[in-house]
Amino acid sequence: IPNVVDTKIFYPAREVEKNSTFEFLHVSSLNDRHKNVSGILEAFAVLLSQGFDAYLTIVGNGFYGKHQNSIDRLSLQSNVSLVKELSIHGIADAMRKSKVLVLFSNYENAPCVISEAHCTGIPVISTNVGGVAEMIDKDNGLLIKPKDQSSLVEAMKWMIKNHIQYDAPAIRQKAVLEYAIDRIAQKYVEVYRRVQSEHGN
Image (cartoon, rainbow, N blue to C red; front, side, top):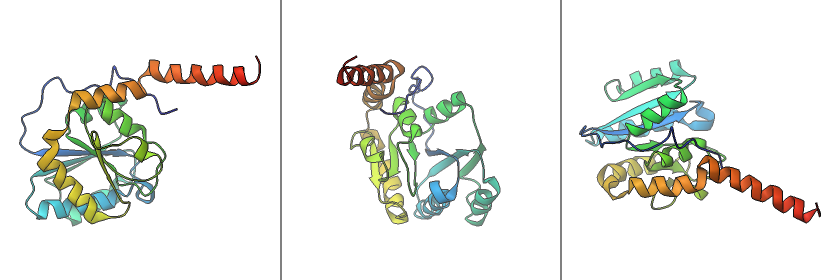
C-alpha cells in the first residue's frame, strides 16, 4: 500500500507560469549520505556551464551550511535557492511553481515526495532505487542510475527540451487513483477483509 497524499493540498497550478527560466525542485532531509544533494548541485553546475537557462530550488530541514558552501563554491548563487523546511502547504506551492522534481538518492523506499509531485501534475527525475521504479514510468518522469552524475545532467537537459510532452492532468489523474485518501483507505479495507477471510472471521 503506497503513501497517502492529500489531493486537496497537492493539485496542479491553475495557470501555467510564463517565466522563461526552467525551474527544478528538490525536497528532502538534505542528508547527503541518503539524498546526495551535493551530486545534484554538481550536476546542476554542469548543466548551467553548457548554456542551459535553469533555476533550482532546494527545500529541506538541515545541513544548510554544507550545501550553502557548495552553492558558493560552484558559483550558483544566482541560480539556486536553499530554503529551510516548509509546511505541507508551502511544499505544494513550491511544486506548483516548478516544472520538475529531482531526486538523486543513493537509496530509497517509496518517497512520498514523488507521490505529491505527481498529484501536483509535475514529472519527476529520480534514481532507480528502492520502490521508485514502481512509481515512475515514461508518462510521469525519468529513471536514472544512482551516483551517475552525467545521467542526471542528461535527464535535466532532456526535461528542459521535452517537458512539453508531459500531460499534467494525466499525471495528476493517475496519481489520484493511486494515492488519494479514499483510495488508500479502500486498499486498507481490502487487506483487512482478506485477512479476516483467511482466518475464518
